Length: 373
Ligand SMILES: NC(=O)c1ccc[n+]([C@@H]2O[C@H](COP(=O)([O-])OP(=O)(O)OC[C@H]3O[C@@H](n4cnc5c(N)ncnc54)[C@H](O)[C@@H]3O)[C@@H](O)[C@H]2O)c1
Image (tube, rainbow, N blue to C red; front, side):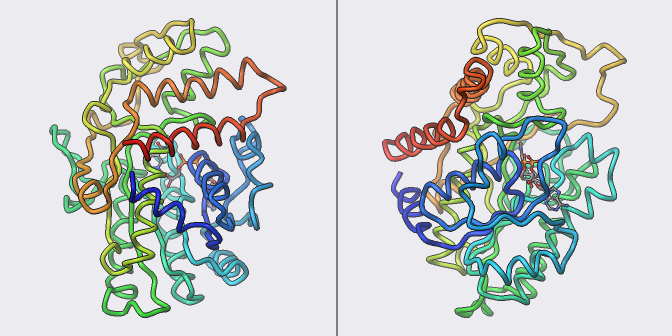
């Protein structure tokens, strides 16, 4: 795909700050950016010590120009990081990204997600020099009444639970800061093109988060235990991590060239065929793992979800496809296959496992596939 190819080439030698670079998506993005020749700086907390981490396993730190461990809730820390690293492009992924954890920790979820974003935007405003900023939110930012429909970028923000609503609020903050401080008429050579990007349930190797279907499946399968599925009929828009990341990169290139036109919000979801039930995903994971089973626990009170979970989420990607020429490249089945392959290699290769090499090879084959389509 030509527009992705152009955007990738544009990133060479650029100073890029990734917040949340120690997390699942941030690590993949940092690897991809470093492979493209960008000078990548990171700002995040250290990965949680009680589980594996793609950041450590793929030795992402060794690829970075700088690695700042600090809290996004601390305005001075993010401002100091911007002053030190002088980024031209910022991808903001640092967040508390889990719905169920947000029920337990609503205040910190809102503080990290909403105020953390506002701190970053204020720091960008005061330090200057950032030409492109992308704030990564979520498909859950939309007000979801539970009816079957595809959310478009113009649909109302909302969110039932603390996490989803924090992402809706983040979107409102981004929109307010864009209009108040980064408005198109004020975009001078020192101005910043501010966008927000919304993606669905992302899967890929190296995610070890709690309460996510793929890490839960892998934890069970690698311990020879049946996978416990609490909500097998819930439909989600599954996509491989490289899909939204390719959208972010394509958009960053367009923001760089036409800052005013692309200072906007974009959905990066799968084609409708990417919508599978959780049960279908579990079956696919078992198939590619080669053995194991899953059990429906929806009627078991001990594991039944105590919290509201949206029954259906779907993103309309017409805007990204018509304005950016971006479309998904992997079916949900291919995305699951690539993902399970990553974990299988990790468990079968054990000490010989080279996570960085595998990530790079999956990125390379994704790039090849993008150019072919
Ligand atoms: N993974 C998904 O399925 C998915 C779907 C939609 C949106 N998102 C969004 O993408 C982004 C990345 O998600 P992920 O899955 O990689 O999450 P993750 O938990 O793997 O990574 C989160 C990152 O944020 C950092 N972070 C958290 N709190 C911080 C703080 N107070 N200060 C500084 N850094 C902090 C962590 O250190 C880590 O680097 C998040 O904004 C998330 O909401 C993820």
